[in-house]
Length: 318
Image 1: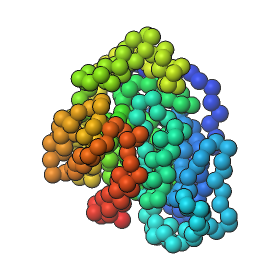
Image 2: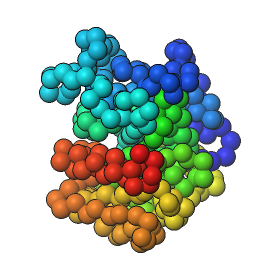
Image 3: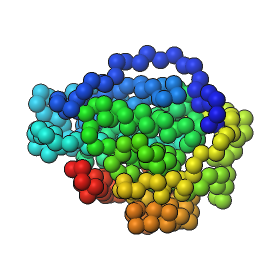
């Protein structure tokens, strides 16, 4: 899937003017935004921006708060000046969330993740190529690195000087591969429920995923049953695997999270990733947790948000 125009098909989109002006003086936006971003290989991906403690509920919700105040998730109001990242001279943090295979930015479980993370920082979510309303076709983790790069770039264009990436399942593999690039521009990386190696078929759920990807009837089901358009081409060349990517991430703070009841990838996957990271990574094995966003408890999401905030501070960019 790496060669040729794989991952890009022609779709008709009106792309609004992006918030690309230099915001370093005025700071990031205070209201939610929804944009189509253009990746380096020409695919349009839908992205959503939620300011800290303001959650965008849908395309029709402007999210505009009363003048001078923002509503928090419990309905209380607070002044943005109360938040250190919004004071003059602050360095605002954004979390860029990469969803799992067959997800998209508007799935309820993705929005739940956004709501939890928005208590700690502003959040950028997006739909990978071939998912939701984004263009192109899914390459199942190969060219999706370009989608994440576009979302990270947008976060910085919006005025965020600190950007962390958090990925789930397929998105977890993408954040690892993205962070391994020397120009990734990320200040912390969290990979949740990610595979360590490609082509794993050792569990029944993963055998079903491979059927969905490799069989024409599977791709048809993916398109109409899961709103996921999957490319038919095999990877050529095979991209760097997550476990091969991990040693290249240091010194960026890295957190690997995995549930001990993950039905897709057993514990040897996070253990391989942690071993590859050595002293430069941290591993959380979560008791009773299943797979990816649906299995992440509010308590776990809160801990991840806190870890990111502390991680970028320890790196010396706070």
